[in-house]
Image 1: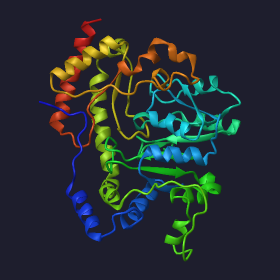
Image 2: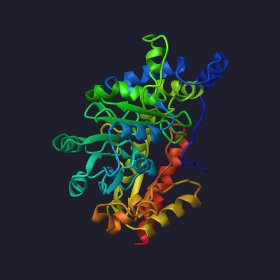
Image 3: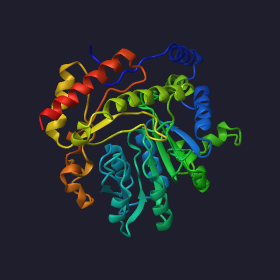
Image 4: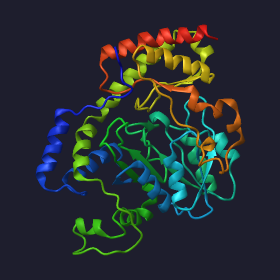
Length: 385
């Protein structure tokens, strides 16, 4: 049996919605489907201002602008993340500073953030890796005490929460992704969240979102025309993408629950195996508030990870590594970072983290097969030690 790493399938509801969008004659942004998507998102995240974007990368870039990051300002973010986080900082002239991650969750480690503090640091950008919350209490306290802006990269975290609050809504700004790899997807797409405590920036955010104009005021009937009034970007996704996204958002609770069930199945294989404690430093858990975006194993060394991946691939199961730490990448080597990142464990994360197949479209028999082979693979790798 061959099991893909990820599977994306169009449901009849998605096809019907896109067909209606095509028939409507309105294919650009800010139409009926955009309004319905925003209504559904507000049910999940009622507090902040929500602005749909063409990607989470764009949402992060807008957040950095709204945060007032300028040339020479530093933003602390995890080294183990996607390049979009650092690019967003660089786009405003700021400087990314790379921190270490928690051994357990691979989310931003607060103690590393503390070590990197300097007068130039103006913001912290935690990433909720795999939809699992970072240690938000500690990070929020740190930002409050030092007067720093908190920008949440919740790209993978639609439907996840921290102590009952949706991820992406705890900071000053948040970003969520609807990329093809996410739990719900429009192929490409994203969401900018401007926190309830930053209402002073809501009007500026809307102007930035609408190419520097007050067009949203016009669309809402508050003006008889709109004008260029400030800095702006072209951020509105098309109605076709929103039509694709809407049926998935309507089913997001069921989608996330299915993914959490798969995570639970993988976890049930891991727990009885005493060898896992010798072989693996950490792996994802059915976290309180998580959304089952992914399941990862973290091996002690790259050799064990490679042996595991080869064993799974030989049996038709597509497993994958993940990010190259940014501080070790060609573009990232010149930026300030936590010295602990030179340790073996942090330096080799890309080669030691392995992700298992994950999609709510995976069939029960496929998950059964992955669990069966997973157990054999771990035993196989253990005998190599």
